[in-house]
Image (cartoon, rainbow, N blue to C red):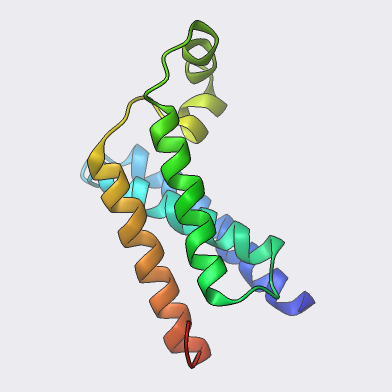
Length: 124
């Protein structure tokens, strides 16, 4: 269990790095950053709950990503102020987009499929 947390932590940090780099390189489509955001949340859930079944590990980051995206529809003054900070911009995002929902879904499906193949999970 401890070993898997270390591996997922390394993958988590690498994903953060790739996500930040994807925003710095203009040739990289913005949807890649959203894809990587979902992958990062997936690895975070893997770090926090290494013993949970794969279905839990798929649904939880999807719900987190969807919740954050739908929260972008809320435009309260304090939330707008928070979104103007570096933390707010990276974690909460700027505005709701359906394409982000698609990117999150695709990110979780891809990373869980790769994990399933690599770790040879039998079923969800």
